[in-house]
Image (cartoon, rainbow, N blue to C red; front, top):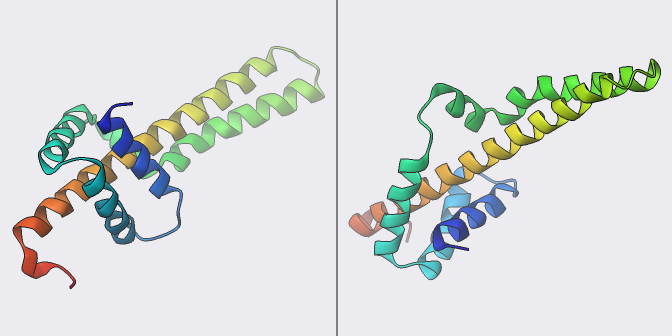
Length: 137
């Protein structure tokens, strides 16, 4: 696992906790400082920023992954319901496709959100290095 992937995994782990974005950044800042050097942080930040999709759909999925995936969960559930109640095996295809699409959208949005959190954390580290008077203590 590369260092970039490690930082993204740390951010994904942090996303599982219910806290504010500022608190997540504060916790990640400490972890990142131990995990990689400052020059590597900047290199990783630029790599992640280049890899981030710039299209509007990706931004929507990043910010509202559950809302975007919801219709696909519905299609999967409806296919399951109709497949069982009417004993039509072809309805199970909708179940598989719907559930797969919903899961893929959720996973992609989660990854995009973690990548954005890595970028924000590295930016925060850089800001605090350049402006030590702005730190909390």
